Amino acid sequence: MQRFRYTKYQEQKEYDDYFSLFEKDKEVQRYVSFWKEKSYFIFMDNQFIGIFSLFPFYPQRMEIRRWILPELRNQGLGTEIAKDITDFAFSTFPECHEIISNIHYENKNSQKSIQKAGYILNQNEYEKRQELGEGTEYIPYVKKKTISSF
Ligand SMILES: CC(C)(COP(=O)(O)OP(=O)(O)OC[C@H]1O[C@@H](n2cnc3c(N)ncnc32)[C@H](O)[C@@H]1OP(=O)(O)O)[C@@H](O)C(=O)NCCC(=O)NCCS
View 1 (cartoon, rainbow, N blue to C red):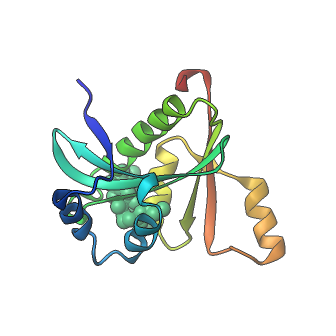
View 2: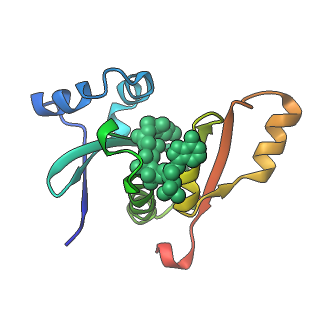
């Protein structure tokens, strides 16, 4: 049985209630409000546990962002979800060949969990940002599609 289930945002009170659990998290408010149609609500054993967004920059390249409930953090769940979302994205959007994740340089927890999920530093993009002095507060990670992701 699948451990995680994802559903798109729905115009229902329960979804607005889930969303309000993150009212203190400005990033959720910013990204999910803006990308509501690109956001998924995460359920584990039918309990709501978090939200992720999957934004297509190009059909071949999507960006993920994920947020789990504060009381569930630092127990390995974020890593497990990142792996599962990545498989979900590659199988749901076959044209997508790489998934990127831009993580704030101070967000060590998120950086560690995305690497444990198989993402690596996007060296070219990192160096480009350093040279230009733009976007340097976000570290670019990438996961390319492999045979096992089909
Ligand atoms: C980011 C997030 C999804 C990660 O999920 P999580 O369940 O907390 O992550 P995990 O427990 O799987 O992994 C976190 C790892 O970071 C480590 N870690 C935590 N704080 C750390 C710190 N300050 N420095 C270095 N490592 C740290 C943990 O020890 C753990 O590694 P370990 O399993 O080897 O011990 C979750 O914390 C979250 O929702 N955060 C708020 C929203 C957010 O920042 N989202 C990312 C936006 S791109």
